[in-house]
Image (cartoon, rainbow, N blue to C red; front, side, top):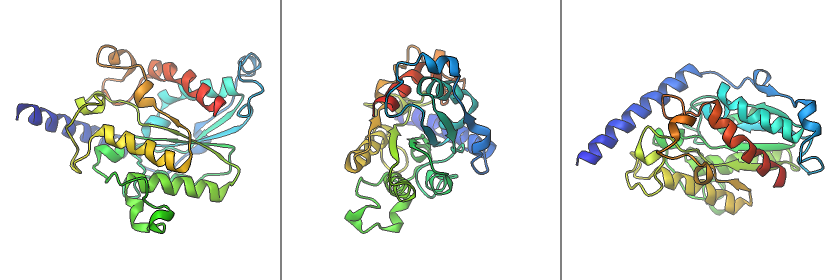
Amino acid sequence: MRHTSIFRKSIAVLALVCSLCAAASAGSPDPKAHHLVPDKKVMKKSPYRGTASFGKSIAVFGGSLSVNKESDAAKQIWADLLGAEVTTYGVGGAGFSIDHGYTLQKQVEEAGIHDIYILWASTNDFTHNREIGTWKDYTSCDGFDESKRSTQCGGINYCIKTILEKNPDAKILFFTSLRFFSADSGHNPFSEVPNKTGRTFGEYVQAQKECCAFQGIPVLDQYGIQGVNEYNFERYYLKDRLHMNREGYSKIGPVQAAFIATH
């Protein structure tokens, strides 16, 4: 009972933090303000010169983790190592569910044409109790049921379909949710404590991977390989324990760049 009470208090605090982030970031994407270009000196020495992803245009979609100022530390690494122009359409507070924030579905609809599209999963579908759904949501399996766009999985599948209708030659890559440390369930893959829908954060991450497995979309499992845990998270996270600081993004940035270059 005590464990459950502590969790409820933690998740309440987290929900408040997320709500404040959403309010602070309310509005539409601002791609012109979130456009990065490569440093030509670094680009010339890149080990990824000659790869299919080098010199391309990259679009990024997500919530605050994809668009906050600290995230530029990672995306500048991509730009420099991949000789790429990186444009972010993310909006703080957004999730895949059509019912939450400036959803990734809307971001994808309004985006321009790019070579590579990064779907960067947020924590918002979990923390705001949007239904997880299944990999079948909004696919040919259910006749593209519009009502399923309210689930995390339906939103993911809608984004993939919409991107390919916009640009049939697009490369789509998926980054799973990162860990958060304001509640045990945010970083403990063995936590059995759910949100109000009865599902754990680990299940949300697993569902992300299952949707991509069905669609044949390469996945960077940031949750599993981030290399951040209860012993070192204070080095890589802001005081809210939810968002990474610049050092955290600098740590994951080269891993992301390598993934983009080789998939």
